[in-house]
Image (cartoon, rainbow, N blue to C red):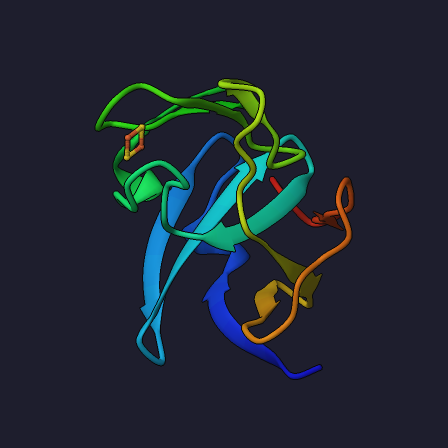
Length: 117
Ligand code: FES
């Protein structure tokens, strides 16, 4: 497991999403409430970047064909069978660190205790 800094928490306020490219990998960061989530920035439907989509609280709608995801769990809302590829993320001293090679267990996220501070 190799965490790398990919952004600063000051770059991603609560309620925002951010698309990044790191080592050729497309990465989506989303800050919801006090938690930061990381996913591969690719819609399971046709691979369009989810960072181009629309975020409403904990729901992300893909810009291409309107598939919907719960961005806190990575699970599909419409269709329910879809699932995002989640990456392990943690916040350390204001830095957002992601394990670009690993996968996170469903339902977990990194808390951002200094969000909004
Ligand atoms: S590529 Fe996202 S809904 Fe089709």
